[in-house]
Image 1 (spheres, rainbow, N blue to C red):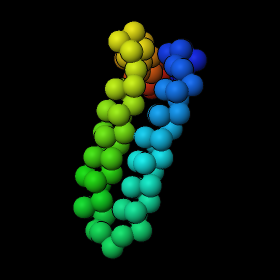
Image 2: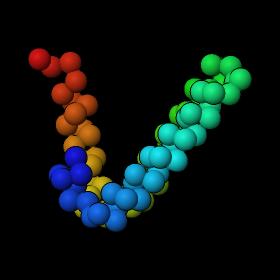
Image 3: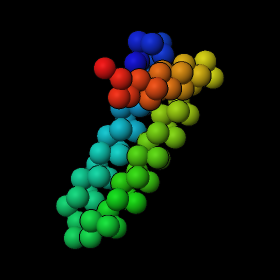
Length: 80
């Protein structure tokens, strides 16, 4: 996907940092004594924050292409 979006090395680096921060947060949640029902909203929040951070790195054209690519994948679900 990075190739399709034509992201820069700097964008990749910052996106990787956002993903690492999300993963670190998830590890903390999974290793906590938090009930599973309470974990899910926290995980969703971490994912949403990472997505927002990554989308903020993209140009308008890259964001439009991402939306296009994601739409194609969603439409293709369940097809042989």
